[in-house]
Length: 247
Image 1 (tube, one colour):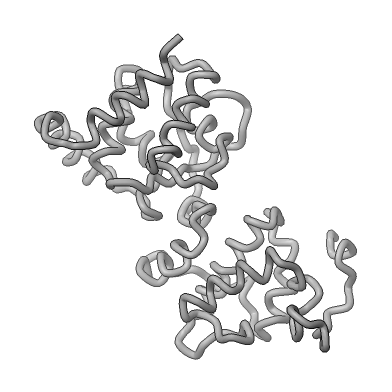
Image 2 (spheres, helix red, strand yellow):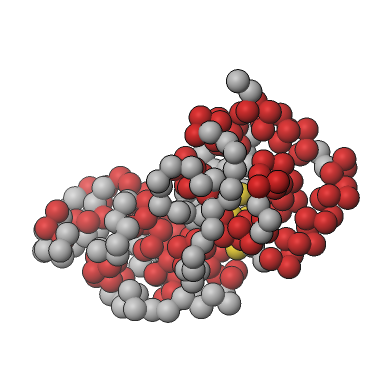
């Protein structure tokens, strides 16, 4: 039990200035800032209580994101969220068909690949690549710099999908111009190394917080192959890739 770090006494702190009425677990700048994102989005009220229109599974998603960011990755702090909201959220199922409602939470915490955390797990396959770790790190920096990956994306996640190092496999969220640019990038970097490239892409990436569909990827792949000279992102991605591989 990891609760003793914050103590087992769950109570509301009064007269505590900036964090008045917050449980001790939430009485810090990081937690308050994360809760405030949900307030600003209209999911929580100013006192951090859920609005009537907020589904209980959305509260669970907020808690998942906060625990991930605050590095409590094993759900050891569910009791604090349930005490704060006075609701059972840990056992609440997440309806994956409610994509818009899920994305409403996902966009609040871009540093967390929420879909990657909640989708059913299988034997995920990393991409096969001939990149060295140094080249992969340079490639990652270029993608972040030009806005293809979020600035808070851990480099270890990118290395894991490139099959480099012994990092836990974590999908990466592509946030820039959409699926066409991702398809072009992956095919340029490692298309020649992967006969099952599209399947591996589904395992390795989400696009703007949404999971990839194999059939859609197949259509996009053919379209990109036929029209690569029409896309504005091609010269920039070529530049990023060439710079990373430069010795």
